[in-house]
Each structure stands twice: as structure tokens, then as C-alpha cells.
Amino acid sequence: MIKRIKGLFADEDFFKPTSIIFASSIIVNISNLLYWFIMVRVLKTHEYGTLNSLVSLFAVFSLPVGVLQTVTTKFVAQFNAKDELNKISQFFFYFLKRISVFSACLILVFLLFKGLLSDYLNLEQSSLVIVLGIMLALSLFHPLVLGLLQGMHRFLALSVNSIVNVLGKLLFGLLLVSLGFGVSGALWGFGCSFLIAVIIGLIQLPKSIFNKIKSSLDFSIKDIYKYFIPTAVALFCFNALINMDIVLVKHFFTANEAGIYSISQLVGKIVFFLPSALSVVMFPKLTKLYSNQEDTTKLLKKNLLLAFVLLVLAGSFIYMFPKFSLNILTGTSFAESIFLSKLFVLSMGFYSLVYILMFYFLSMHKFIYVWYIAISSILQFTLINIFHVNLQQVLYVVIANSFALFLSGLFLIKGAKND
Image 1 (cartoon, rainbow, N blue to C red):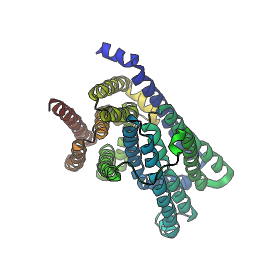
Image 2: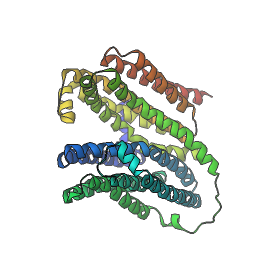
Image 3: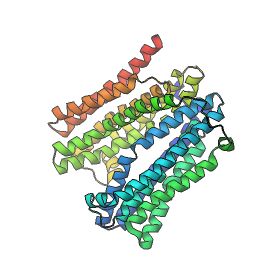
Image 4: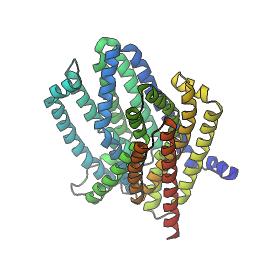
């Protein structure tokens, strides 16, 4: 085991890009936390509530964005593996045109329904709905650029772009709020950051991408749309798995108990974040190996081993210093939260490994694990609805479900290898 761990650090092709992505992920997450830390202090209470509701609405509308980046990464990596830059260029312009049209239509919809949305959200300014629409429209271009960078293995450029995006949101948001633009200024921080990140991303891409290309496509667009559907199902169901317990606890328990559960989950999110960042590098590399008909299991084993090491280190720290960990992350350390945070280490730890397995199967167009994830999400929802005597029982259900889903993925890999 120790020899294998040392081998991970000696493998520069694996360790260097992983380290870059890991470091940038830390910067991005800290900057995101800092954004909300500042906004809760510079905005009035009702203004912060408005901002939070609008950003939550943005998160709902932008759900397909993560799917677009995954699909872009997959096919660009596939084309890049065979040096088919013409196909990458065709892919880019095909989706650029359609995103441009869709974005324009989206802004029009928000303009037409601004009154309805404004009334529903009890907004004092209906113009905030228009700003939200523009912010959402600009955000649609970003995953296309990020997917291109990720698929072409430009991990340093990808990291820089992600950092520029989050710092732009922080700096522009703070500047505009300080100038008296309030919630509108905070939202424009998002819009400006997306615009700058997309422009920088276009500069980061190879110039050959922008060469004049023929109008006909050299690849099947049907294959891309066919891949889009199971990918969307996988990402939606996985997000449901790691978030549904929060919603159900809010429904079945008191506000105080739900608050304690949510506070405890923050520890779990840190544990999930550490190894899940590995998939950013793993996904395009696995796609390249699969496209060239090379062995993919070695890279998977490296990622699972490194994920396991990170989980053991983070989990050990939290188990030894639970009160300190909660104080650092949340500023509170209720006795109930200490025990729950230890359980979250297990549930989120297994789900981070499931996340890696999910992208392993997606990289090879093997969608059977997607249906395992979908069934698992229904099963977890059903079991929590049945077993919720206390908060611990809810987490026991999540732990058992995450462990079973992880094991099923390993058995699928072993079965495929034997075949």
C-alpha cells in the first residue's frame, strides 16, 4: 500500500495536473465562501435574503450547465485523442451558435415574465429579474469553454479560468455593492465574472480552433445528444442523493433539528470535496485512453487510491478533533453535531468514491451505472421516508445506501473485466 502511494507522487503525468486542479479547487471554494461571508455583512437582512433566493433560482435554471460541460469534455477529449482538431472546431461553433440563440431567447423570456417572477419572489425591484436573466444567459457560454479546456487536457488554463471567474464575482460584486447598487450589484458581479472568464477562455484556446471550417459536420450530432440524456440523469440523480436528506430532514424534523443537521453536513461537504476534485483530471484522461483502446483500470485505481488516502487523512482529523473542526467551519459545536459530523464523514466519503466511479463509466459510454444511481436515489428517498425516528437513523440510511452503491460499482467493473 505504501509503495503504491509513493508511486502516485512519482507519476508526474498523474500527480502534476491533479495537484493543479486540487489547489485551484481550494482557492475557488474559499473565494466562494468569502463572497457570501462579505455579502451577509454589507447587505441589509432583507437584501441578503433576496440575493440568496435569486442565486438559488439561478442554480435551478443552470442545472443543464454542468451536463453541457461534461458532454463537451467527453467528446472534445475523444476528438483530441485522435488529433481531430477540425472536429473540435466544428463542435465548438455548432454549440456556440445554438447557445447564442438560446441565450437571447432566455433574456426575452425573463423580460416578458419579469412581473410574474417579481411578484412570486416578492421583489421590490422587477429589474432584478432582468439582471438574473442576463446573468443566466452569460453563464451558458462558460461550460462550453471550460469543457474545451478540460477535454484538451489544458488543466493549468482551466484552473486559472475557474479562479478568474470566482475572483471576478467577488471583486465586481463587492465594488458594485459598495457603490450603492445593492442586490443588483451583487448579481452583476456574477454576470461580469462569467463574461470575463469566457473572453479569457477563448484566448486560452488554441488558435486552430477558430480556423474557417466547412458547414457540414464530420461527426454524428445524434451521438452527442444520446450521450447528453444519461449524463443528465446521472448528474441529477447524484445531486439528489447528496442533497435530498437535507430537504427531508427539514420536512420531518423541527427547525432546530434541521439546523443542527445542516451544520453537521458542512463537515461532510469538505470530505466530499477533497477526492471529488480528482474526477476533473481523470475524466478526459480516461476518455483518451478508452478512445485509443488502452487500459483504463490503472488510472481508475490510482484515483481511487489517492481518494482513499485523502478520505483517511480528512476523516482521521475530524474524528480526533470534531469540536475544533465544527468551530472552524461553522462557528458552532453542538453536542449533537459532533456525532452527526462523524457519520457525515462516512456517507460523503462513500459518495465521493461513487462520484469517481460515475465519471469512470461515463467516460466509456457505459450507462448501466447511471441506472444504479437512479434506482439508488429512489431507494434512499423511500427509506428516509420510512426510517426517520431521529437524525442518526436518517444518516444510517444514507451511509448504507452510499456504501451499497459504491460496492455495486466495483462489482460492475470486476464483472466487465472478467467478460
